[in-house]
Length: 230
Image 1 (cartoon, rainbow, N blue to C red):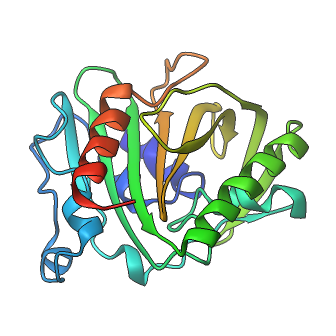
Image 2 (image 1 turned 90 degrees about the horizontal axis):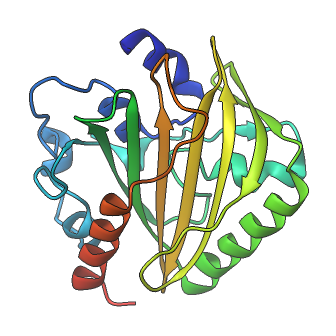
């Protein structure tokens, strides 16, 4: 699975997601040395930690605010969908904290959960842009990041119930190397905070669809509500 995970790096660029693909190994600390040295902002306190979600290995992005991993779409109309899969949801994010979760029970399942601070108007605008892009990009699009090309097909808006907040959810088939992998993305706005969940199944025998597990989304949104005021 490690070989497939390295190939998928150009598809879902959140370092937390990629770290989570090393399933089945020893527990990974939920904060690296560089991340732990930073002041514990409200977003960092709200992010998932090891033990928050039983059955998943949790790892942290060591330096999410220093990265510029923004996928570029081949179609301007689809740019919001491409950019939201990068290290930040878009260029208006003031701070982003990411976590990766690898399932210990479902082979190949990797999930990312990230929190981003915004100005309230920018957070609302992002959701509007994503909904508009979904309506225009059902036929798919291609992204490029650091010279790596990824193609998304069967882009479909899907229903996904979340606790409070405004949300948008969609599925797609991602192809970068080898067989296509199912992807599910959920973006939630809670006041001025944008929460992203991305799930992908990297197994060679992956089912045709994948979904963000509700035990992850619910836990993250509940922890956010206890830590950050809307």
